[in-house]
Image (cartoon, rainbow, N blue to C red):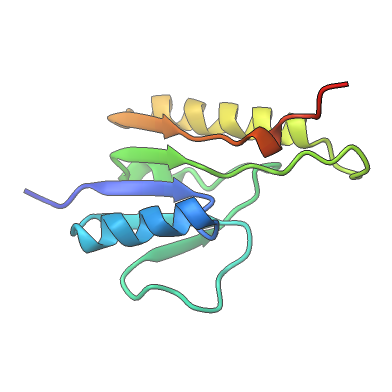
Length: 119
């Protein structure tokens, strides 16, 4: 039986990088989706540059069994980008691709930092 394949978004973040290491050490094939390619890469992990605000290379999903989505853009009322729109549309895109390619499971992590502050 082949080792399972997991896509991990936000793989440069604290939680994402620990998940990458965990699954890699368990013998899984890891497809790490990152906004900026890291200078230090874990040998054996496939790093793919992506942006939640644009379309994602679907061929990555064609290979995968699982998705762990822990990427987000931090909410900032002064930012020139609409973080809610990026977070929501990016997550919708990932879910659609997961359904299209029949991934076995999706895990979604979020943060209070992704939400606007209460007024």
